[in-house]
Image 1 (cartoon, rainbow, N blue to C red):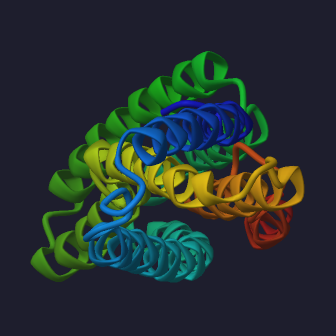
Image 2: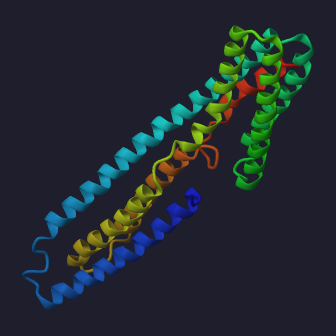
Image 3: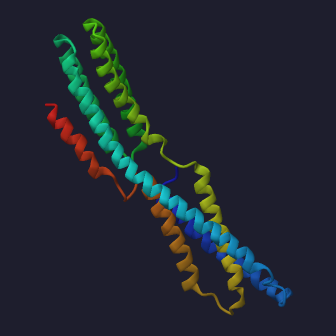
Length: 252
């Protein structure tokens, strides 16, 4: 996904270009046929602008809801790790120290994954390390459960581990399809073209309106993207990571 500033900046510049292009097309049309230049334009403009507004509204609403969900997921992940860690007490005593060390390394890795963002490559490397640690924890836990040979213990320990592992893949899927943002970009440009065409009736350009319209639309899209990817921009969910830090401190 493109960085929010680059996406919004491209939209801003593109809208300015399309506003000017639309105005020139409108001026040429008025010169050729003054009476019919604006015929039907209002209906088309209204429909396109309404669609653009609806897409912004739904995208913003969805991004805000997913932002809250991501914060809740961090809390849920903390609870899942904490529960699985406590249930290690049910396993044979000789298996517990190794598993507890793996849990500490795993939680350190999870924290590092978040801290290394927005460096995507470094975060992905750390995420791969977290995956390897998950496999090691699962393998050791299964072996310990077999050694104890207690169905109740096996169910409690492995179900907690399964919940801990599953939750790490949930947040990565919480994004709308890329085509939604492509449509947002395209509709913004289309609206700029139509707005520029409608401004052709004035003798001079209104730079205040042109720049203001493009800037507001680009700023709105920027905020939507920043909320949608809250670990890559200015709007962050880092503060909620403190619950993971506190859990790690309790494991010492």
